[in-house]
Length: 295
Image (cartoon, rainbow, N blue to C red):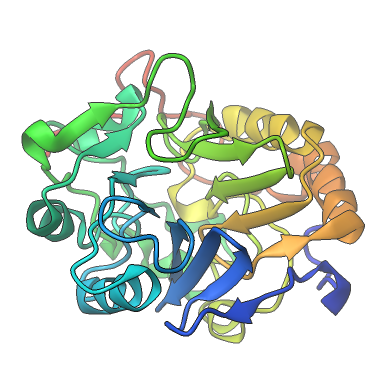
């Protein structure tokens, strides 16, 4: 099975409507699709003020819906204990500044992602040469400028624990961005993978609208280090997850998902890396500063 083959319904995670419009995939984990990207809510329904966590912060214009989902899931006037970021691309931080200020909440991200979150550096530009559809062709128009959450920005703990999420660990999974991270709970093998790999063909506007369940590498148009991206997928596949929720696409679970993830890791250079592109031969990396552009 390759990343281009649609997966059967047996690979879809079991979901229930938690009453807020979010898709609950575990008693303490739910996600919502906002236009073309997922946000994830950690915490049991009715958890109350400062007893839950938001992972990623959607697109510009989705703040009202995120707040409504949070109120309905966790309670009126309920604020998160923290906002965690898998990375800082525009579709994951669209309303971050507004939410962080309104909720007066710390924002945690990998230190290599901090320049994109404190106003110091912009991402490298999107690459329209990677192919795959309309969104890839439009990628040079996507915002790459940084946001700035100021003193609220914190580094993820050095012991790999996750603030506000006991029993979870953060994993550095670079490639799509220098400081990309995924979150992992060993007890039930649940994974929040961000964009390290995804479950829809994000380059294609048609596939994004259809939300066909397929396993893919990270969105090609913004991935800046393909060697590291492949290593990150291999590391996540080796964990043998039971349930995964990614930044784009539907949640997946079970042996069919794991088989597809191992296929993706094994064949990554063939099925995920584009034949040509700005960053295929010349990756942009934190180590030499090429991943950080003037804002």
